[in-house]
Every structure is written in structure tokens, then in C-alpha cells.
Amino acid sequence: MDVFSADWPGICRRIVATQREIFARTAGIEERTVYEGVGEGGDRTLVIDRECEDAVFAELDELAAQGASFVAVSEERGEVTFNGGGDARLVIDPIDGSLNARRTLPSHSLSIALAGGDSMAAVEFGFVHDFGADEEFSATRGEGARRDGEEIRVGSDGDKLEVLGVESAEPEWALPALEALAGKVYRLRVVGSIAITASYVAAGRFDGMTSLRSCRSVDIAAAQLIVREAGGQIAFGDLTLERAGLGLDLRYPVAAAAGETGLGILTALP
Image 1 (tube, rainbow, N blue to C red):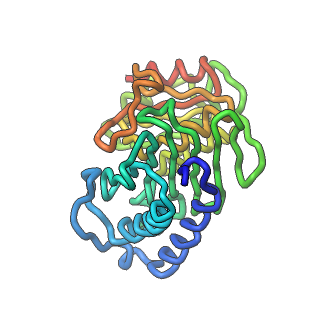
Image 2 (image 1 turned 90 degrees about the vertical axis):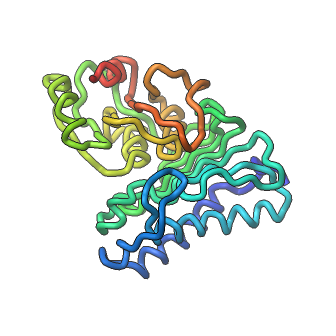
């Protein structure tokens, strides 16, 4: 079986359904604040992180049983090779916005990207499910971006951003950036999930997004394709899409906007 011919929207929706059951079963902060070691991504692993990842790998095991070859890159397990691997990469964040999920804030997401190589440019399919709004964002390379099946486009470009999504908003990182944004941004919004925030740029809800410290490839691999297929632009610091890899240990400054003017404002931040 060719992994690229699989029904990826259907696979992702089955994972979402299983994850919904996990979140319903662990509905309180105390139940969700149970740790079990440190994941391959370097963060402490919550039990719900592992259970949500297990839901993903149950589907991947089934694909492998049908003969599909690929390498899965996931926040908790690291790199896992199925049937020799090959060029195909699946880049997975089972819960993007784990702090939100742990504190029962609704904005957290499942993010899955399928790539034909080891760079952001090679991503062929991206899927982000926002559990708070119960919305699905997806894109297939060359076929546009969608929210719940309806085509989406970025908003208009301009020299002032009306609404900017900010991620990794620790005070020590935020203060210099906020000073630099004075007069260039009307309002800030902090969602707490990089994948959701970038998808909101794709849908025209935000005029741009920036992560104030470097983010992992698993956080943005799916959403960056959604932004680009919706007509937007994305930057990984000074790296091109071809040089921005998908390895779990890689970190990038990320900014996205509707066009060159907005992206220029964000990439100039300290």
C-alpha cells in the first residue's frame, strides 16, 4: 500500500473521535495533570499526551499492516520507522496546546502532516483539528485549504495588522516584541496552540501570527501548508522551506501573514 493513497481525512477524523473520548473521560484539571516521564521532544509527558498519541499510532499500525512504508515523527515517541521507512514522513503533534488541554482550556489541537521528504516544502497533506471550536482545517498541496470542507483564503495584506495571533508568549520574550509592534498592530490574541493560530491566519481570522520563541517542527508542519494553500506566506527565520527540516530536534522562529508586507513586519521583530 502507498501511504500517500490512504484516506488521510478519514484517518485523521477517526483519531479525533478517539481523542474526544479521552478528553471526555478525563474532564477535570486533576485528572489531566498526571505525568509519566519525559517525551522525546524534551517536555514532561502527560498521561493524556501518551493516550492521544496512542490513538494516532493505532491508525499508523493499521496502515503498516497493509504494507505502507513511512517514518513517523511524533512529540512523545520520537522517530518510529514502519516497513523500512522510505521517503514518506508523518509529522505528528497529538496535542498542540498541552497546557491548555491540561488546564481544561478548550483551545488545543491535533496536528498531522504527511510529507514526501524531510522538509516543510515536501509536506503534501496537512490536518489540524481545533477541539475548542470543533473545527477541522486541512490542505492538500496544489488543491487549496479548507475549514470543515469549505475553501478558505487569507485576509488582505497591509502595513498594519488588525489582529495578530501571538504564541510562546512568555513575558521575557513578549516585552521586546510588543514594543516593536507598537503602531503596527491593533489587537493581539493568544490562543495557546501554534497550529490553531496559524490555521486562523489561513482562514482570514488573524492577519498574522508569530511565535516569540522558536517552535518545533511538529507544531507547525501541518498548519504551514494550510497557510500556504490558503494564499498566505510563512517564514522560518532565515531558512527557506526546503531547508526547514521536519526532525523532532529542530526549532524555528515562525511567522505567518496574508502577504509580504505583513510578514515583513513580523520577521523584523527582535
